[in-house]
Amino acid sequence: MADSSIRQRQHKTKSPTSLQELSSQPDEVEDQSSRVISLLDVLRVIITLIGVSCALSYYLTSGSSFIWNYQPWFANTAQVAQWWAGPLQLTPDQLALYNGTDPKKPIYLAINGSIFDVTEGRRTYGPGGSYEVFAGRDATRAFVTGCFLEDRTGDLRGAEDIYIPIDDPDEEISSGARKTRAEKERREATKRVLQEVSKWEAFYRNHKKYFAVGKLVGVPEYATDPPELCEPAQKGRPKRKNMKKAGDTDKAPGKPVQ
Image 1 (cartoon, rainbow, N blue to C red):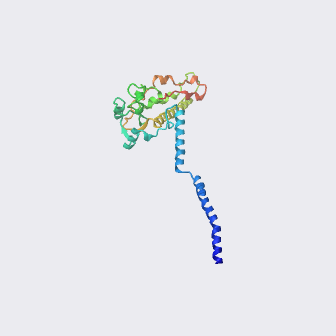
Image 2 (cartoon, helix red, strand yellow):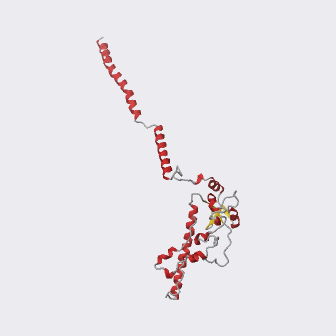
Image 3 (spheres, rainbow, N blue to C red):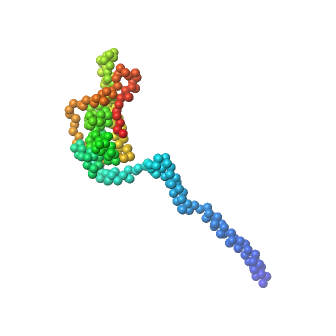
């Protein structure tokens, strides 16, 4: 009897403690759950950041783009179709068919043996455009000399003359020294021509609207005499008697295509 009464008293004294523990558990669970970041919270943050980025892009680009003018190549259906079909190989005669006169065909031009699709610039390269002379042909030489009508060819022979100074007949220099200097200047000028061509090839290759589609093949060898430098390019050549420092030769023209 004494043992049972003691156990009853112990049981009665423990009951309030157990109730207190039970009553405190929901608070603990609530505190723990309040510290957990839900997936919905993460989505809210991401959507907010995207919205702020789009708003800033629209403001800083003067309303032209919500995505900072980013235009991935796969967003261009024509470029995706060309990628799927593979690179083209066109002869000069075949390339001439893509000069913009047929609205159902793309507009191509070639530079340094690479063919580029410039259809997105139809107003510029199509009929009546400011650079229609480049459509459907390889006019690499014109990219160097700036003579769009006269130099619609890929023949670069003699184009380096645009960077070579015109000799001063009154200059006192031996014939040997003159010859050595001329050979050096021609090598440097030829290198500058290739650099100019590479620059414009990269311009089209990295353009956000234009893209490479293939290579120009079957180009006949240039067996005739080299073409003469066009008149505007000839007039733009530096004159040695006016050169006060060696760096002045860098001012020789090479007209860009916008």
